[in-house]
Image (cartoon, rainbow, N blue to C red):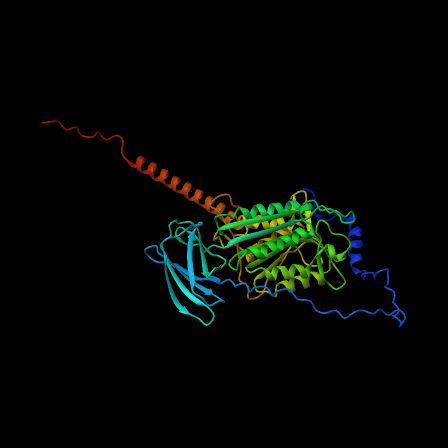
Length: 457
């Protein structure tokens, strides 16, 4: 087994230091300075006729504002009837009509009753029997000629779907356009491997899983920003969002963290700043888990900037940050694992090794426990993962385990071996005792006694 190596080779570090040093240089002033123009004298003054205001553009016709429809609650009665309570905010204050469709087909039999009117909205209760047990129920409110955006409710076996959706943006940069940035061997593979592991959660903990992978040339600054905007626009408050970043990181003199996309140069504007990352994650409505497997060391990325990024992100109660190492350690990778040490531990844990509670679910605290043991084991104690979350944030459950194909927790494996051994010993003892007792009983019976023969009289 080859020893673990830094995510960038040691002889490349001077080049990365030069890149980090470039961030310390203040922006240069423009080389050309606008020359002052002399004020016009009386001889040069221009005489202009006063301009009269012409007829301005006609004011645009006011566009009616569309009503806003939200689903407040949903339940299923004993006879299978679905009851959905909605709220409609109608700026025009007109009469509202509600329509229902399932999988795009209008539902003909819907009972609508207005439960109560509020100051700025009205509540309606819809009662219907779904025509299909699985699908998407869409509700639309119409006021005059204006319709609301559809509000959707997913159905599973005739009941509202309670499982969240999972959105994954997995970014791995190992090859950079700039020759000054050293390459990483397994960052792109880390991104693909983690995405594949999360896709195996389909039909377990989540109702649906949507994954976007950006690796190497695909992971430009603009594409990463587009991916963050995609998470903001598509996820909902009930969903779970995972953002994975593998690659190089650096900092500026103010302690600001930067992730280096594939097209990064020695310029702040070409890097993903911690501020941009923080703003994007805070705009995501659901639960957010940030996984950072970025290379950083004391001479390139100091503890101050790294800890500042994590502390700033975890001010939000929905954001959990799990980092590959502390701010003064190097994230390591090795051909023996074909992954970064942190990513390898994550994948093992999500596949079942971290199931310490033996409830077939993997929580963030269990994942942290496994990584805190496994990563130092892989790196000979030179790397320690860090989990940061607000005190008010719950212990998110990130994965569920299938019935087959899991990697058992080491303690569970030991217990199973002990149980098999104890069962084998017990069975052997029982067989031994049974054979001994049988032989003893058989030997105690007299064999020289003739049994009487009865005649048929």
